[in-house]
Length: 134
Image (cartoon, rainbow, N blue to C red; front, side):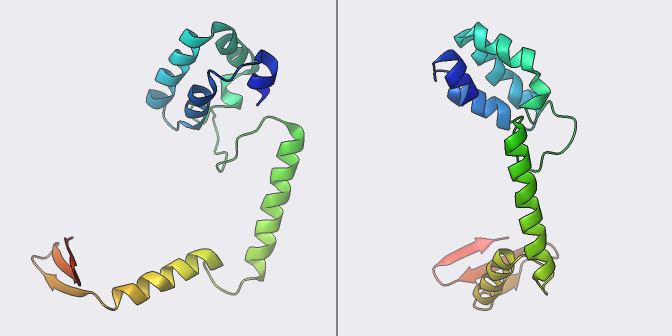
């Protein structure tokens, strides 16, 4: 959004998003090269603010899926971590409620499966009309 406001354009938006979200340099570099081709001024701006501030691939630590260089946004993210921690501390289960529910659903669905071993490492799984080799 800062780029759109500063440069009054959105023609690099998708490439910026893909570059920012890339985990590996091999994924990041092609997107950043496209930004350079589309608008060198935007590429220069991004380089000047520091690629490590907005790119997962260039960041030296784990961002826990939160990308921001704005102090207010950082503070809000800290609040979210606190809220999540508080909810986790109140839980008496080892997994988050959402994950626990998904796991219970999978367990229930698995009870109806018929499993036949094909070898020590392969199994034939039958689920009505959907058979799978695993």
